Image: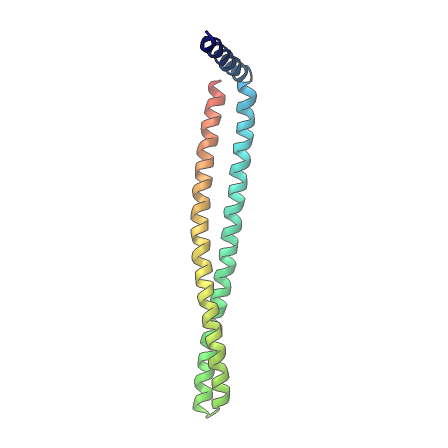
Length: 139
């Protein structure tokens, strides 16, 4: 008998929950649409920021490559002119710039990975938003 009473209460609670959800389905759906639209906008902004940062990193990388090339030619000239001390300093600077260039390469790879990941998130959020909009039209 006690089991039946507990089952009856659980059934009544489930029915009340279902009735509440049914009565407020449109309000819930509207809020889910707002949340979905916000998620899509936030994801798009994150993609745009990551792309901008990647472009900035690419610009810095290009400048590093140009500096290294310039220093290498100057170092060669210094060696040819017998300015070994100057050539040594330039070689040390080139080594530092090469290390910085490698870090820049790694940063660009990370940005590309992050951009791909964020684009996938945007795509999924857009699909969810479209699904919710279809549901709203059906309701």
